[in-house]
Image (tube, rainbow, N blue to C red):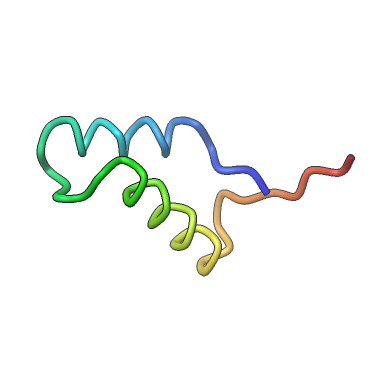
Length: 47
């Protein structure tokens, strides 16, 4: 599973600017959960 770096950078910037009232880890966790449930921006990595 892969989440695009720009998505993570955006969410982290929102925490830094005080626009999100969560910790960094909570912010990233919610991004992963949202992406997993919507099926968007995720691709499988074949080893």
